[in-house]
Length: 288
Ligand SMILES: [Zn+2]
Image (cartoon, rainbow, N blue to C red):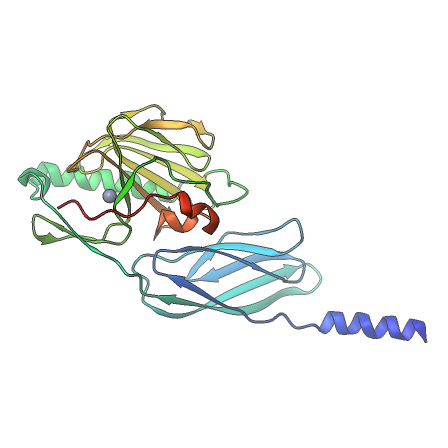
């Protein structure tokens, strides 16, 4: 009798369904999801890409997804695969709805040479972009978590993520990072450990450092006055990487901080857990 009861409970547990979940995000968000899934090797697909997934200490499946700034608002399938040698691959389907970000319009006025480019400048700008693009796909040892403890510099958010930019009245690509205004020389620290992938003086971005954090996450810090790291260095969280400056195309001293996650343009602020966000910079009116 007792034996039969145990057998029934075991059967019930085995048959417990994995509930489909619906997640929400805004354009530019990095989201973290956790789900109860059977034991086995995990894979997660969304937006035609694979996203990093791990098992937590309690055995939950945990994954991070980057919703690119220009993702069309709508509902997207999110597919988990769990593979075991015994039962092969089993799939589980969730959903992710993406809503439109409320992005501001930002106007800046700069010297003509920073708005209209000749052949030589264009060549340099393209080479700079290529260096950064290559860094987005570089392999780096993964960090155990992708949450960050705070901002790389103390200051005021002068241009938020996603702002539609106008340079000397001409529309340009949306702002793929955040700008934090701070006095020249203010130390910039890395809010997540990683490998320095690029140190370069770029035409538009000025002195730039790109750091790979693993899992396909890369931070780009631009317009630095001074850089205190070199390519190949491993940088621990909280270490100084340089100083705030106004090199490249900048109307005043500020740090531009952009994050790419498997090439998706991510709002760095979305990587800060909610309770830490109270310490993030306050929004200020745009510098015209
Ligand atoms: Zn910027």
